[in-house]
Amino acid sequence: MLRRPTGQTAVQTLAQKTGLTPPGDLRDWWTVYGGTEHLAFAEVLPPFYTPLGPVAALQSWELKRRFWPTGTGQLDSSAGAPTTGFHPLWLPFAFDGCGDALAVDLRPGVLHGCVVEWDRERREMDKPEWTSIDEMLDQVATSLENGSPVGHCVPAVTAEGRLDWRPA
Image (tube, rainbow, N blue to C red):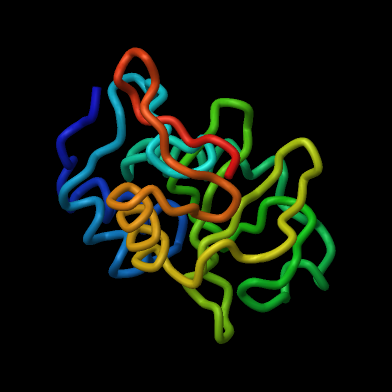
């Protein structure tokens, strides 16, 4: 179900087509993880997100172009600032199957590289979820090791032996 890494060519193609430079922690993650086969759900990240490899991340970014904000006030905002619409300087790296996404916020500012959760139905992002991919992965790993909450979720194993995130 999990794919092997796709190599640096896919990351370079993503950067060229989007004009975005993935942060080092995301590039590092993509050296060991290439997403899932056929975008199969593997809710590895709380509360219900499946990570994308660089090829699928590019496809997701391209699909979200129709949700880009149109006002300059939204486009000129700093990293981590609440936003209506999917900002073109966000790089999606996880999906939920309903249009929501986790993305790295590559807008300039102190929070450059933070992880945001975009709600497709509301077409907005309220606040950063983590300051970086590294912080997110560290909190998820700690939660998996000792069962502690990540945000409002705790890890659980389903009857089929799959990882699930349940309300804390």
